[in-house]
Image (cartoon, rainbow, N blue to C red; front, side, top):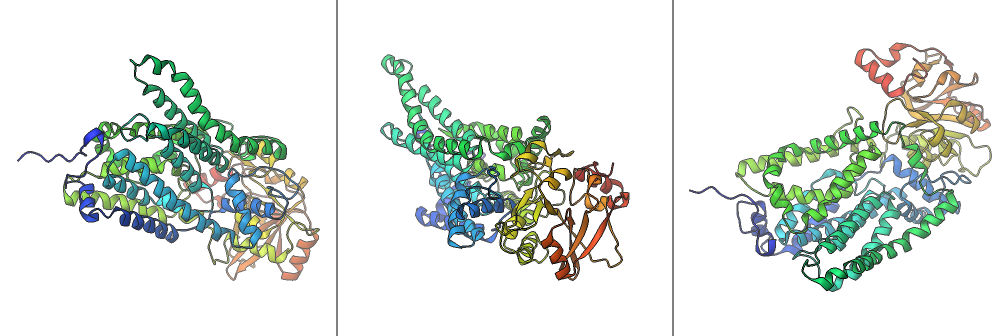
Amino acid sequence: MPPVDVTVAAGPQGEMTSADGRRLTGRLDQLVAGRWMLAEVLLYAVAAIAGWCVRFVQDDAFISYRFSRNLARGEGLVFNPGEPVEGYTNFLWTAVHALPERLGWSTPAFSQVVGIGIMVGTVAVSLRLARRLFGDPAMAYLATLALVANVTFIGYGTGGLETMLQTLLVISVAALLLPVGTANAVAADRWGLRRVGAGLLGGLAVLTRMDSAVLVTTLVLVHLVQQWRTTPADDGPARASRLPQAAVSLGQVVVPAALVVVPWLVWKLGFYGEVLPNTFFAKSAANPLVPFLFGLLYLLCFFASYAAFLLIGRFRRMRREFFAIPGMAQVFVVVPVWMLYICVVGADFMEFRFLVPILPVLALLAGYLVDPVRSTGRQVLLVGTLLAFSAAHAVAPTVIPYPVLTFSQIRHWPTESRTDWHAMGRLLAEEFPGGPDVAGQPVVGVAPLGVISYYSDLPTIDMLGLTDAWVARNGDDWDLYYPGHVKMAPVRYLERRDVSLVVGQPLTKEPDPARTSYRLSELVVLWPNTDLKVLPDTARVIEIPLTDDQVWAVLYLQPNAKVDAAIERNGWRVLPVDRTCDPADFGSGLQSKLGKLFVGDSTCP
């Protein structure tokens, strides 16, 4: 008996066919039996339900929400009233969230509902692009199933940030502009309108995240290059008109994009005084090689965490036929470009968030590779293992925060805990009500900026510099590179900014009635990577009870009348700072070395 051909077959004009029952697509065809519209609706429902089941909002989202709140209050897009600093990277998303703030709705809940809707839209556009490329509804459906099965993609259907909106806009630009010059491309007389649409959506993508320009520009260039190449070599008049046609095509994209982007840039320059966001400076490491290497680690860990190594053999055998699919190589150009960008900027610390914009493209390859069935048992084992690795992303704890924090670690809303950052922010709001407009409010210094500052609604200094121009440019450098955490506000700066309460990296302890002080080596966790030996003599530590078995240690940097009143009213313990370091506070052996690595040695060499 001859061996069974398990590769995907090509039909007329390079289209995929589903005639081979030894493929998952063949079984999909049999199962669906032509009811693709029903199957599509079911896929959207599954995506929405899965997104809701793993919904969350992360700390950084609340930074945007605070900007949105101040916009709704008439203060403008500022973190602290009267301080115009662009401490966000998602203008369009932040501006949209002024709506729930203005109407008194729950902004985190609003972002989750809107995010899931956007995620379903992304699935729909991805499915349509896959159909055009594969020319086969079963193969397109399988590729989109691979996308929905990716927990990173589903998870960032919520999260509270602009990730999914950026992904929807970018994949929509790809669907409008590609492929070009293939049998599955759109009719020539429709390109003009599609380019205008791509320009508008590309402009909105840049407003959503400025680095969307990398992806949008890549897609536009691929479109123009392919248009240039499709001109017949023996057609003299057509070749002579290539340059004017290319100029017209470029203008059809660039002009609408410019109408969206240029007014925004002019407003930014007038309001903030610069075009680049403050976060660019806060996240720029002194040594560019270190972020690049971190980016490589980030990419390696992403593919390893999804068991991509199980597909290496299939990729080696099938890559030629995959990229021979008309238009597939055109779409895939964004993948290496975006991965290079990830390395250049040093990646991110949130559960592989930076990879979400290219996941719809990677899913095309993933679906193609799992399609062939060598044997039922091996296929079940392969698909089951891949799904298990993906599902682990929803529940895996953060053992070591390198290269990313997992979903379980970055989930900060909804929650009912009395010891988390949400509870800490609400406690401060209860003790110091009225918001930033009330005279005499204590100024708070915070490192995980979002949740605590949003719910406390107090004047806040960002110790990491994302929303503080001085710290972003002059803060102390972290000894250990970590994305978005390369600067730290020094003691003298917080003194100049009249900070009273230093929350830093929130520190909780078990109550100890016998404790009489806090050593500097205990406080470096709260305020790492700066020299605490220069703390003013008046600095104390306040123990704020959260539960019967947990107190919140906050550094009381300099006096404030309202803080003193709260201490007296609540009976909070106030302990002096013992200006010594005890190596035992860092543990022993490897634990001690890792501890010193994370907090630096400025305070305790």
